[in-house]
Image (cartoon, one colour):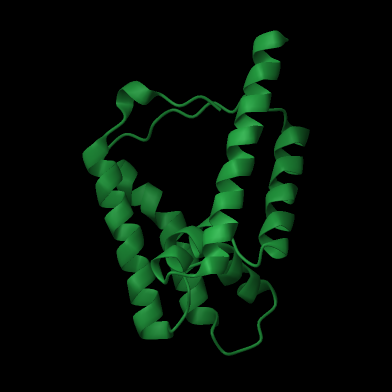
Length: 145
């Protein structure tokens, strides 16, 4: 995947971060739930309570937001250079990791850290370390190969 850093917009990025934080606060205050995307989606796939409506609304917001954003600003061009099988394998590994880690980067990194959760701090440090190692190794391989 290539990112056009020349198009980086700190103001819009900051605004996006504020909106993510506000969404997490609203979800905790009004639903008593953590804004972890894997948990929200997992709850739809295995419903245990009568809570489908807020889960669907939250996921719909995630899907509709880029569409609304695109009405005001052009979306950046994204080029995925990985093969389709590699992309599928990566997605499955991320899904397995969220199950093993009892949450994803949004649940642990955004919501868990803001609640000063030690478990979330450890999980986030592991997410980041593995990401750095993976990017370094793959970057080395692409440089050598």
